[in-house]
Amino acid sequence: MTTTTVAVAGGSLGGLTAALLLRDLGHDVTIYERSAVELEQRGAGIGFLPDSSRYLIERVGLSLDDISTSIGIIRYFDRRGGITHELRHRYHFSSWNTVYRHLLSAFGRDRYLLGREVVGRDEHDDHVTVRFAGGASVDADLLVCADGVGSTFRRQLMPDVRHQYAGYVGWRGMARESDLHPDTVRQLGDAISYYVYANSHILVYPIPGLDGSVVPGERLINFVWYRNYLDGDDIGDLLLDVGGVQREISLPPGAVRPEHAAELRATAVARLPAVLSDVVVAVDEPFLQVVYDVEIPQMAFGRTCLVGDAGFVARPHAAAGTAKAAANAWALADALAANPDIPQALAAWEPGQLALGRQLLERTQRLGARSQFLGTWDPTDPDVLFRLREEGP
Ligand SMILES: Cc1cc2nc3c(=O)[nH]c(=O)nc-3n(C[C@H](O)[C@H](O)[C@H](O)COP(=O)(O)OP(=O)(O)OC[C@H]3O[C@@H](n4cnc5c(N)ncnc54)[C@H](O)[C@@H]3O)c2cc1C
Image 1 (spheres, rainbow, N blue to C red):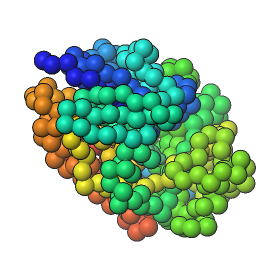
Image 2: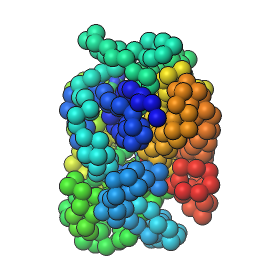
Image 3: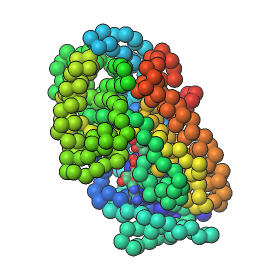
Image 4: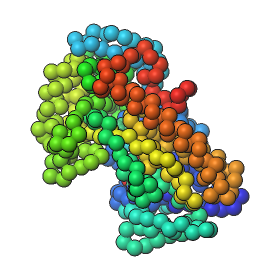
């Protein structure tokens, strides 16, 4: 096997998984991450689908039960807290921090370079030159762009591709299980809890605590509440942060203006069953992510490829964003193992990844339309279950 020099732009879950898998093949891999500090601030929950946990289980040797919470029931409430539908189904949930910490520790910090913003690339026949803010550059045989939803490379390589605002945001937050009333904890039980009402829905589930603990009582209770905002002034006002900066993609913890946080809590009490509004009200710093669709026609460009949210961005209703990033990375490693010629390997990798992204995008668009606009969400329809692929997990 020839040793290939790989530059990975972006050191979040997608970039780390790709980097680990390519290094396992014997390649010489360096991650360039824009953030000057390790990405510890995002504690939010992630649906832990098999693709998301695969590296940590198969290659690091961790056990699913050590790095994720598990629930065995999907439960729907009505406004008064009565149960309208219940289904036995097993999901695992982890937190962004837990997965990041384990992947980073497996990769090590020597070749995980912080404060390195990649700003461009020049493609040559036998290498690609990766350019950084500040003027430095490196040459690599392969550039993996894992620079997320706002990807610099997606913008440069496909300037016509636009973020399509879905018409709503995902409000998110985590409360300490120990801060909730014991009755609330008991009612939430071993379940993911839903409340679906006119043009909105909320889901609540346990995730590991900030220290990674999955012991009941030490966990966090995570909520994701999808709420509609009109395009233009309505969403614009929401996204004007506490410091007066107009954001576009998300408001991190601490950035939401107090009047919007107060409105969130008041609406929770007015609209949601008490068992779920108790969780929303207990969260100190709610934050939000704007829901976008990004569809792309191409993921391989000579010696450069896009993985994870740098490629397709699908709505979160399948809880599969991290799984898609990981699946892109595993397929990339398989393609490079099968063919050391990088442009040929990327060309062989691309069609399956385009198909994966498209089906996830279409399915999550359907789900979002049903819950946020059409009022046709059906808890008995298997389509509403979390999964990456149309069929299977
Ligand atoms: C409301 C909501 C709920 C979600 N829930 C789930 C869920 O339950 N399960 C799930 O799997 N997914 C979920 N997701 C999706 C998930 O967050 C993403 O799909 C996943 O994090 C993608 O990972 P990534 O590595 O591709 O990109 P990101 O995590 O966005 O990382 C990109 C990285 O690149 C860095 N970067 C950016 N630009 C540059 C540059 N120019 N140079 C160098 N570095 C750069 C960034 O600092 C960042 O570290 C949810 C998303 C939303 C909006």
